[in-house]
Length: 489
Ligand code: AMP
Image (cartoon, rainbow, N blue to C red):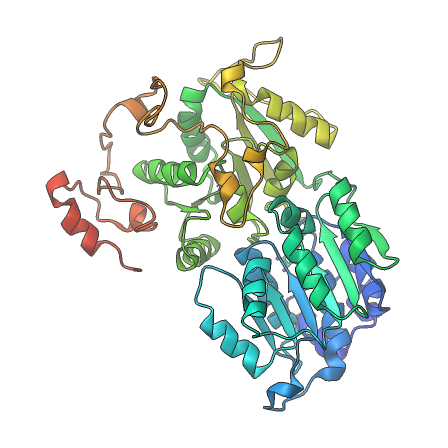
């Protein structure tokens, strides 16, 4: 099938061809005709399948009759609302709407939290036909009477499963109550739980159900490798894999915000350009980190589940699970960053004894046993029987510790595989770590390390890790160095 056969307009086909797309992906071939026919749709589609164009192209087609170049805001009411769980995903959808709608006189805006609300109010006041939004900020704008949905015709909920995971259900219901009941509603979700089906029942009218990929399965172009690793050997194994496989780019997942910053710093100390992206970073830092990773300036992006949700990186070859997610469905989301739009991808998981149960849950969800490979010099074996030691158990799926929140709450949950700088924190007995990486001061090897300013917090300067001069700075001068070394603040 070609795009011409789908019944889209010449302006939209031109934009598609500008992107170099030749054939619609399977999800596009399935959803576009239904959306064009005005039907409600409930689609199970993972990220990477082309689902964004799947709903954006027909949405633009349906709004094309309203296209106009009038300067009057009244001629540009909100006609379509697209809701997404995270800022990054909202930004990406907005980019897609702009790309695919570039030959149409329709206006688009994106609104999300963590940045000033005033420019968003100004954009809405001048009128937009397509509004992409995260739920929290959208409701702030509603409260400020900056947005009116009386002319809305189409609602899209993207990554609906993640919205529910993040506790957005009440917000979604509030927004739904503001929309005209006569509308077309589309729901996209990578996974379909009972909760999602319930939401779909309340949101959609006689929806067409489309499953682009079988539920809870992963893209076949991704190969999965599990390396068993002793917890105190994990970092060394990670370094070994990055170097030995000469990884040009990889997205590494950890469970906590702190763990993400810490791992990025540790990699930077070993001359691997790495930045962290998580809920504690401000929007500018997150956008910059993502941009630098996308354009290849940064080799490794260390992310938490919440921050990485929906991130689209062209031709990303490797996703590494430094820590397995507490929720097995997050494994599917994580590895969906690679093997996109038909390219090959590799998902590597470093799994320690205490994560055995999490691995079993993932394998159960995928209904397949993931291939395990030993790396010479990093041998590790799981004890054959029973569950892992109770005190080392990570909260299992469904635990409130694993439930992500808009501000990245879940990223606090779970136990770090990365040993803490102050083991044990202020409470409880200190843990002991034996890996010299954590217990001994860093000694530069052949070349000096890139990270040099001790005590520099990553929230102050996330990019410091590799932008810093390659020399050690005595502690006395760190305050001075800090002032100099926060270029983006
Ligand atoms: P998505 O699943 O919407 O995040 O899209 C994943 C990637 O596939 C994006 O980088 C799109 O640019 C790309 N893509 C979308 N549709 C097509 C298509 N028909 N042919 C080739 N690439 C596509």
